[in-house]
Image (cartoon, rainbow, N blue to C red; front, side, top):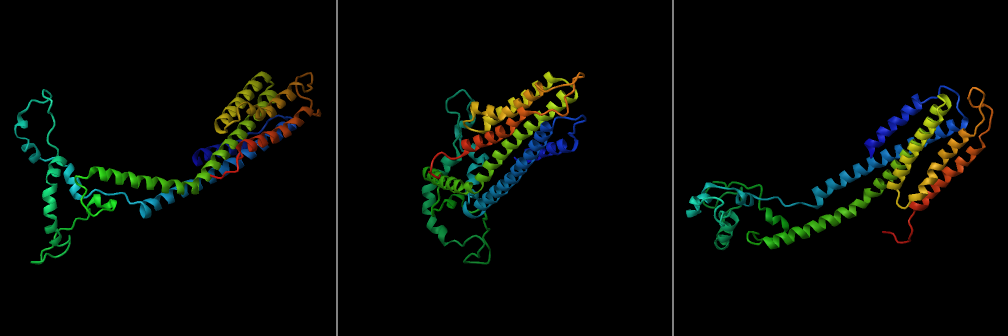
Length: 320
């Protein structure tokens, strides 16, 4: 959210620096225009800060999990060699080397894992002799020659066993599933450390965009209706932005639905106030008149935020 919020903050700065009215507009339009843009700037600033905090926290916890708590198994040289293809495997096919491809059912060569599994019993017999050999990097018993060190080690041993997992693929898959479940459970516990910041960043982003659209509607009313004297264009544009604000509220807030119309009522009151206002013979608004209908805009804004607070508040006493 921090990138999108920063772009919207730039738009708010442009409104404050360049969004002036050339002609005199009613005081209520100026008031609601600047208050809406100011509220939008505050909400968007909170959204950027909360999203950056959530991003930094999530990356730090994920790095800590991957480096200190969860060590995923790394395949060793034996496992990698099993996956390699060699010409010796092709030569061991015998009569299969002269077969015509795709004309017979048996179109598969003998796989290396199958070849190695047949040698598992023989490898178990030689395991006792292998224990007597020096460890990688140590000096052999009968001389000074060092055995080449295998820094990869045995990848299957990373699951916590003392035996080679060749031929025990089912046990290996069960170990993977067990380790994966522990990894997911640990991630879900740590997710609570930054998920709340991410949720409130989305709330601030939604409220900031809504207030920005409100301020844009008031700006269009003052520009198109008062300055240019095009009331129909001003009304259509204001209603279009209000419809966009209602759609955003419906998407971001669960259960708002038809109640979101309350958020558009302040703008409707402004349109009605301009429609019934007294005008001079030239069509300009009378500067000294009072817009009593606009007094309803303030409690409607308060009612809208109270509605959001009621919808977003927890309905039960159970804390999850």
